[in-house]
Amino acid sequence: MYKTHTCGELRLTHVDQQVTLAGWVHRRRDHGGVVFIDLRDRFGITQVVVNPNLPQEMLEQVTNIRSEWVLQVTGRVQRRPEGMVNPRLPTGEIDVMAQSVVVLNPAKPLPFMISKNGEEADETTRLKYRYLDLRRERMRANLELRHRVVKFMRDYLSERGFLEVETPYLFKTTPEGARDYLVPSRLYPGQFYALPQSPQQLKQLLMVAGVERYYQIARCFRDEDSRGDRQPEFTQLDLEMSFVHRDDILELVEGLFTAMIPAVGTDKHLVASPWPRITYREAMERYGSDKPDLRFGMELMDASTILRTNSAPVVKEGPASGGVIKCLAAPGCAGYSRTSVDEIDDYAKSLGAGGISVLALTANGPKGNALKFMSTAEVDAVQKLTGTQTGDLILLVAGPSGVVNPVLGAIRGWFRDKLELADPNELAFAWVLDFPMFEWDEEQHKWGAAHHPFTMPQLADLPKFDSDPASIRSEAYDLVCNGYELASGSIRIHQRELQSRVFQLLGISQEEAKLKFGHLLEAFEYGAPPHGGIAPGIDRLVMLLAGEPNIREVIAFPKNSTGRDVMADSPSSVEPKQLKELHIKLDL
Image (cartoon, rainbow, N blue to C red; front, side, top):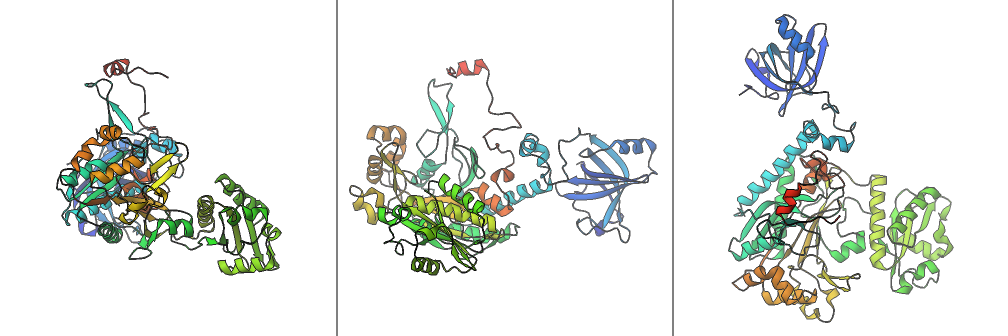
């Protein structure tokens, strides 16, 4: 070994011991001929003192040392003088008095300072030099947190009889909601593998195989547009169980997360335990989102009954046309300027609303454009409905509920950030249940699977298959936290007849079903047990636990916001020979 101790290990108990350290130069300071070097490795920082009584050749070498040079230092541990202790460092009570300094490797001038947290460098530069960015304390802490999270998951599930089983990356292209990444086969010209969007079919086949309790830390691949909490390749805790009902899976995951949060060394804490369970319909009606942030109130209120006889054109877009008129109360915002209100109005219009109406409850009485169509009695009733008081601002939106709810839900999130209504150290987990089984695709004029086509419909709704598919509820469930979807799961269909019936409603012919899912449908005929599962996203979870703004900060080598690897300059072109071997011709 190049070192006897790590740079975060030495304490007063090591005083007078001779040690050898190896690491990177975090800082170098020259004080009247005495050189102080903060030597860093993954485990911490130790201050090395180089006195001028060392051999001249070594002193000349130390003079040339710069940030991020790799050194090996041998010396004796010494207690720091009174008044020189650094309480911010675990090693702050000692120094290493250098006897030998060896340069293992110099470093070029850096594109950014490693000793800072990254705010001074743009993301493109950080990603281009990711191997340097990962040396930062903040990024190292994120990687270590991720490691602890994954280790806890493995230990927790292993103790409960789960088997970790790897499933293949090269599989079959199937419709799962996003584009597949295709891999051409050299041995079978014109045919392709697909990288799995999830191990969905494979884990169901493991249940048919009798594994009963399966998990893996699974890599998944989806060819879709990137965003802050999405990457083309991501990691999830994939698990599946046989002979279980929905609540069995929910209780397992809730127990796992509740035990994990305090154990992995984060300053986050749970808002509630046990976690709330709300239906999809309730989430949309109360919060305008199927992944609501429950760290604050500000719920949507339905004013349709109050304004049902109002004949104003803006109201006619709501109850009079079969829609709704709902409102949202923003505390302490009655003093918002016209410019601020217009900003919110433009935001609402960009989301599909016709616009917003406002009531500002000022000390001089209500003000705002809603007074143009609302009577005094209606204003009083809306104020009572929302529980508002002087100083608050009420926003009203009318239209179809499918537009009004998500628009007000987005505005609710806007106010959360603007007014800092949510505690960043709180984790408000909740289960969202009873999702629709099917949703109508206006462009293709056919039904689509709201979750995925292997989700079990609620048995009570089976009679509605032919008469009212829109009202069929599924045995699907989502785990949400702080406005993010952290996991999605369901009880699966395990009977071929029911699976074929779902395919038929989705417009998937018998021939297409056999071509794409024949292996799964056949497996169902060999004693498939009732089963279900879930797949919490590890990237998003660690992002929340680390308090980071996006998942790129908790992935070692992420793609940028447009899906490129700027460090390796990928994707990139390939040699014509490679394309020829794959029988591929480019048509650009």
